[in-house]
Picture: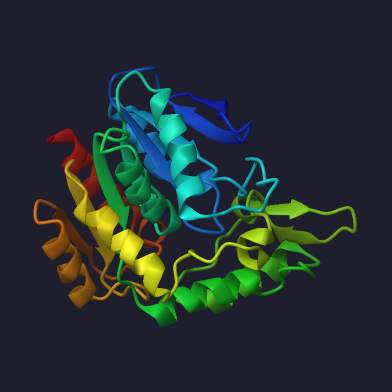
Length: 285
């Protein structure tokens, strides 16, 4: 495993984005953007493997998540997530590749459109497409909204909530990793490590069945000109095989990997297979 350092990026809007940077500075960089409700720590194993393979890996906490600033105005639109990613990318020696899961993937699509395909040298979308299953998206939002205000009395209680949401995933032997995704309040209760306004605030273009949101995302996908890879979980709750095929029609130059026995959180379900596929794709560019 190569060494890791914490870095703080301050955008033009004075938004602080916290990241872990793995490996030495190099002209081969890759940004990892997590899904809604997650933190940069979701990419720990993948980022380490990329660093060992000679890449500088940058795992970011998206705005309102983990240790990054909460948006003072409660703006969690895709454009704002995208602008943050564009800024982080601009600090690399060369345009980096980006690997985006769910929310991170949608933000990457918008970032490429806003930057005229200049922000990233390649885009890897992890189980996310513009036209997704509305029921799957609503299930994710429902989980994120559960225990939103009251939180959990213990880490074990939070772990049980995750187990009910992801019944296919074996329970971890240690809760240390879970601790990084929760914050301990002054009242002694644990709450998810993200801004409740991400769910309760004014934003209306989170992953949903909203027609305008889908139109913007389709336009962003069709705008892609850089090398692109879609990685789908074969058992995904969010992206069907048909929807994956529709994406490949929107982006004819895109490559496609279907990871067997993986659900929406592909990297968490089958990390070795997922990481090998992405390393191979980016290394062959």
